[in-house]
Length: 285
Image (cartoon, rainbow, N blue to C red; front, side, top):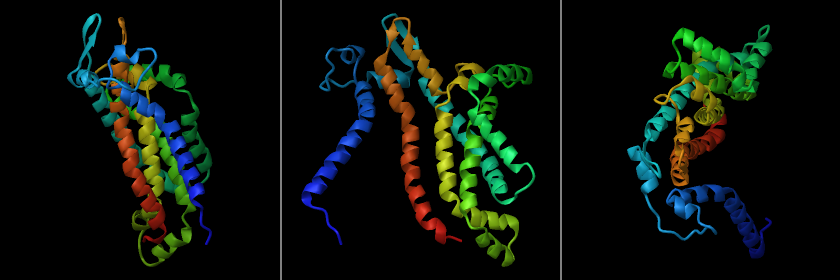
């Protein structure tokens, strides 16, 4: 068995550390900025030595943003709740609709199936500005403007094609003979789908749900135009930090930290189950 020398292990550790520092530096710098005042942030040259403050987080939580022009009322926590509700609900509905559809496209080959699947995928290709004007008119006529239901409906243009195509690939990689053998044993179609196909495609479903949540969370254009301030997510609510008296960099950094925390925590949580699913999926059922 080949062994590595201490020098090779040291060099490998140094290389991994440098790569991690390179990619993590922007996040670390943003976190440091969130504990500084504007005067400290704009100091030249910048320094990592400063007196930390919680004023930025306090302003976001209380909704009182102190500027040179006075106190500005913001609803950042409300925007954060909107993002969480819209993204979670949109992904849940997308999984309910997309997973069975992905299984149908993978197993039930019918005339026009590829055309329908590609049409759904093309929704991801279209720039949001292309459909924004007709959507605005339709939403006003249907009474869906400035509603959670309308935004969740539009978010399906983001999450549903992604879920459909990712999960479809996982279903196609599952040998159909496993399902046929289970059916021959006397089980019906839905039982086979629930007990065989879903567990084996679990890693793909988890990955699709995670990516869809991130894409829905980061959406900006649809929420900016189709919703007012009380329904807008955190990506749009962050515009409140750009005021007439200047940009509140400390509050912007604190807002970034709070806004990426849910997706970052979800990614860390789902990563463990993705690895478990990849290692156990082949022997389940």
